[in-house]
Image (tube, rainbow, N blue to C red; front, side, top):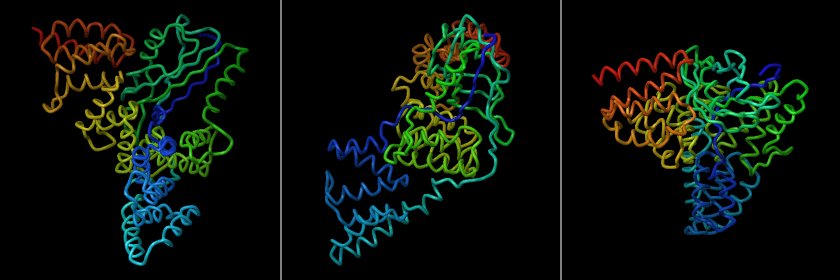
Length: 450
């Protein structure tokens, strides 16, 4: 791909599907009179510190919409929502309080004090809300070690744009990849195979290599004279979901405004503004924002490093049951390098995503079930079933064959494992470190088969 201008970027935060249970969907459920669903989501967001949701919970209790009417509880929720001196919250709180009798007022004051002590800002500062840090990021981001020279037979000579979601191992090799967007790609498998052979600088935290999960590589390329096409494509990505004024009832819009503040070289003040917008979107149930909050606090990226808070956000994002969020949480918990190790919870998350037919989760779960030493997790029969289901169409052929081979070996099918692992070796021939791993496993399967 000669004489091409290339723009390459790497984002290390999760890019999940739009939240199926955020503030906007809760409002929609409420307007459709789906009160139980709306109340459940308002409460979930209220416990994350979202003040509008706290106010809405109070309003539902005032009206008794599919809950028993309870003005004392309503006042407590509204008092919690008024903690930041929001004018609407204070007005509604005071209106409700004025309609209480003296005994109710005493109960309401007591309950509001308890609510603020349990769910108020001070408590959330200790458990969930990150502390901004002006220090430079301690994370070194993965990037291409060399400028890719993509195979001419795999891409268009005029214009190409693709986004690749992938994991990076500690050596910097791409694993478990899938294309999120493709334009001008003539042979996706050939392009993917080529990308898999490229070694990147692995992410590092305090100079120690770490795995990266659900990284996004975006590539836009055009031959000389087609710069306007590149510019248009980039601008289209920037404009997606964006409007001049922030819509404070729309978590996606807030997140897009935060994303827009990334461009150029933002000052510390701009970075802090961006962080506040991401936090607000996360409290509104936005999965991308929640996952970003998890990684930012786990890595000390813009915030003080806090594994407790990072884990809390990681688990919160997984509550959405979004496949990509589940995969990220499972991967981080299973490796146990930046959070406390929790293999059982990781397997639980992968099982949830597997039930929703998420291919990456199926592949990862198959590997774990075939290789895990913990008898509470080890399940070779299920591993083989999952591996057979997903490996034929899995884009990362090295991982596909290695996982199937591991499942076959776990079931005592060593002749099949050798044959399958030999295929993995063929695919790994240009991937240095992965080739050494593949050959090592092949040798083990041959020894067991004797």
